[in-house]
Every structure is written in C-alpha cells, then in structure tokens.
Length: 479
Ligand SMILES: *[C@@H]1O[C@H](CO)[C@@H](O)[C@H](O)[C@H]1NC(C)=O
Ligand SMILES: *[C@@H]1O[C@H](CO)[C@@H](O)[C@H](O)[C@H]1NC(C)=O
Ligand SMILES: *[C@@H]1O[C@H](CO)[C@@H](O)[C@H](O)[C@H]1NC(C)=O
Ligand SMILES: *[C@@H]1O[C@H](CO)[C@@H](O)[C@H](O)[C@H]1NC(C)=O
Ligand SMILES: *[C@@H]1O[C@H](CO)[C@@H](O)[C@H](O)[C@H]1NC(C)=O
Ligand SMILES: *[C@@H]1O[C@H](CO)[C@@H](O)[C@H](O)[C@H]1NC(C)=O
Ligand SMILES: *[C@@H]1O[C@H](CO)[C@@H](O)[C@H](O)[C@H]1NC(C)=O
Image (cartoon, rainbow, N blue to C red; front, side):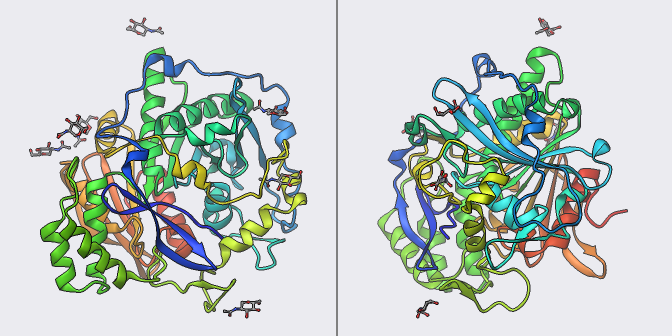
C-alpha cells in the first residue's frame, strides 16, 4: 500500500511517505517549493466563486442506494448510498461519495462530512474503511466485518473523495489532476455539497459539521469560510454549518516544522546535540531560508528517526504484507483495503468506476500531490475568523503521531492568542485517561492518548467518545 499523506519536516520541503517493498520510508521524496504558489494566507473567495454548477438530481438518490455492499455481514441493516456528483460539467469533474445514515434515529441526528488529507488521499480508503466507517476490511481483502465503534452510531456520515483524481473521483480532462490546489478543492467540495443536498433534500436544514484530519486542516477551514460566505451573501442558511473538528491538523508551516523536531526529541528519538543544533540554526518562519548548517542537523535527525512508522511512532510495521501485531490495529490494513476496493464486484456494489477509469484504485494520487498548485503557509487566520463566527471549533491530536504531532498543534494554538477558559486536565473514559483537554475562548483542544495519526483506527472507543462530546458541545469527560 502506498499510504501517502504528506508531512513536512523541513520548511518548504514536503515529504511524502510511501511504502517501498512494504517498508515505510518517510524521507524518500522531497519536493521543492517552486512547484507551489505558496502564499502566506489563503486566497480570498470572490462572489463569482459562489456561482457553481447545479445539476438535476431527480431519482438519483434511490439509484445511489447500496442494497448490499459486497462482502458485508448480514446484520445489522444499514442505510447506505454511494455515487457520483458532477461538480464541473465542462471538463467533466465528478466527485465520488459514500454516505451512511445513523443506525439510531437518523432523522434527528446531524449530518457530518469527513475528509482525509494528503493532499490527494482518499476518504473512502482512509476514513470509511480504516478509521470510522461501519465496516473494516478483513485480512482476506474480500469480506467486511462490523466496526462496533463506527461514528454512524451517533451521526449521519458522508465521506467524500476529493479533489478529482483521488480514489474513484475523476475528471474526464485528466490534466485537471495536475492543476489541483487548495482553492479549487474548496470550490469543488462546496459545489458537491450544494448538489448532494439537492439529491438528499431532507438534509438541507440539518445541523451540519465538517470533520477530518491531517491536510484536511487546510481543506476544512477554507471550505467552512466559503460556506459561511455563501450563507451571508444570500442572507439565507444554504448549509447549516454548526462546527468543525480536525484531527492532527496540518494548519501552520512554522509550528508544523518546529513542533515535529521537538516531538521526535521529546520522545527520546533524537539526541540533545542534534536537537539543539536544529533549535539554534533553523528558522522556520515565513520567507526564511534554511541555512546549510540547519539542513545538516536535519539530515542527522533523519538518521535517528530511521524506519519508524511516522503516523504512529510506537506501532509495528507492515513487513512483507504481514505484521507482528497480535492485537489491536493491524498495520497491514491498508493492503486489505486496496485489494478490496479493486475487486470488480465491490466497485459494482458501490456504483463506482462507471467510466472505466484507467489504473487501479489507489489510496493516494501522486500526480495530484506532486502538482499541487496553491497552498497558504498558514490557515490560522481562517481559524481565527471561524472562532469569532460563533461556530464550534475543535482540534484534536493522537499523541503518538509523528506526522502532524501533538506539539505542532499546541504551538499553533499559542499563535491564535486565545485565552484559557477551562485549564488542561485529563478526560476519562471508564476508569482510564482518554487523553487531555483544554477549553479556550471559542476553541477546544483534545488529545487522544495512545493514538497515532489515524485516531479512530488506533483508539476507536476514545475516538467515538470524543466525537460524541464534540456533537454535544461538551468537553470530553464532562456530564
Ligand atoms: C465523462 O465521460 C464519460 C464518457 O464519455 C461520460 O459517460 C461521463 O458522464 C463523463 N463525466 C462527466 C462528469 O461529465
Ligand atoms: C442581504 O441583506 C442585505 C442587507 O439587508 C441587502 O443589502 C442585500 O441585498 C441582501 N441580499 C440578498 C441576496 O437578498
Ligand atoms: C515574502 O516573500 C514574498 C515573495 O517572495 C514577498 O512578496 C513578500 O514581500 C515577503 N514577505 C515578507 C514579510 O518578507
Ligand atoms: C515475502 O513474502 C514472500 C511470499 O510470502 C516470500 O516468498 C518472501 O521470501 C518474503 N520475503 C521476506 C524478505 O521475508
Ligand atoms: C475501473 O474498471 C476497469 C474495468 O472496467 C478496471 O480495469 C480499472 O482498473 C478500474 N479502475 C479503478 C480506478 O479501479
Ligand atoms: C470569540 O467569539 C466572539 C464572538 O463570537 C468574538 O467577539 C471574540 O473576539 C472571539 N474570541 C476569540 C479569541 O476568537
Ligand atoms: C498574537 O499576539 C501577538 C502579540 O500581541 C501579535 O504580534 C500577533 O500578531 C498575534 N497573532 C495573531 C495571529 O493574532
């Protein structure tokens, strides 16, 4: 499996993690910033950006209903749908979604969108099949079992493969894959939502939340602002956005870099000497260039970090398709998922790949990732505006993730200049500490103890507890 979610350990150098012969080699590929239009803050949305394609959706909801997903257990019965929504008819860009209704009282439960990151990675392969969806793929790569901690126990969950080129989402003009970026991703996702609500009109006025992880730290704040702008512009709540929650969120390049180095040092992976060398010689701020001395220390750090799985630094590796893990999360899960999603009968039951897409379904699209066109250095100003807008804003971190480490988020929050309302304290699930929580003015930060980057995969009980508290707007562990 080529699990590829970016993390940048060097300023202006993005590192793609990929799996070589089933061994994770996190430092395999460096990309120069010249590929990018890196701006300090995100580009503004104009009123023209709100004029989007609207298709006809009559009868399409029923066509999208999944009677039975290939390999799924006989019970329980769930209402699930999947299919395509055209977001741009000229080039022919269509985004693929999977939607599952809550198993209990779905009509009174909110609607929640989940987005994985990358940029260029799939929410069907990640969020749905590996993290929080109703099923997990078995070792045979053909059958499914129930995930008892599925988030659709408490909400109606929509998974979107975004942008075009990711997973089953496509463009008939494949050069679109080389021109993706933050701005178009936000506009296409917004267009998707407007059209999806036409297909599922009973959800039009429902409370709506945006959730996701990693590079969705860029997607979510920008999409949220676009939604609020459109509501404001029409004096009408088109999408009833109530809050956002982002896990191990990639939100600010400076704190991302500083926090990553401090994390690996604090976890006793990097020597004092090398860490001090980085602290003294590296300037990660906007527009700074890294000195040769700094780069040399970072190279030494890479040597210490070695072949650790960066998304969960204490986890076993998936070696040669098998793992030494006897309990808990299977590190080879991504391989089972890739096998499963490439079965023709699975694609048929999902209404996916109707246009004979070339190649295999892959978790991440390197073409999309390598050619990303625009990305701001920081989305903290977007987050500040969302905090002041009155919607609920939560950040959480699995505390054993090295890709977007807990320290990176803690440093980023400092830059937000908000004030503490409820000081840092442990939150409990049953008798155990689930993690720690701190309530700020207009922002909540929660850690999940013993979880890597993909929090619901490693700590499913803590993850659904956290999600339920978020929906209720209560600090984890409170009544
Ligand atoms: C892409 O092209 C195929 C084949 O012509 C067509 O069936 C499909 O509707 C097109 N997709 C979009 C989104 O226009
Ligand atoms: C929204 O309200 C403002 C202020 O009342 C008004 O100027 C504007 O024309 C309204 N816009 C729409 C689309 O109704
Ligand atoms: C950062 O770099 C950009 C482009 O090189 C330049 O336009 C801008 O003035 C610089 N900003 C600062 C604060 O130095
Ligand atoms: C990997 O697995 C294959 C097939 O199971 C086996 O033939 C090969 O020897 C294994 N390689 C290593 C390095 O263990
Ligand atoms: C789509 O289906 C075709 C067979 O029609 C298959 O060859 C191809 O691998 C599939 N594409 C993806 C992305 O799964
Ligand atoms: C919190 O939100 C209120 C209004 O909703 C705003 O006045 C205040 O500035 C915000 N504070 C922060 C730190 O975001
Ligand atoms: C936070 O406060 C400092 C000091 O007052 C200020 O320089 C900085 O611009 C503020 N940051 C943000 C993101 O508001």
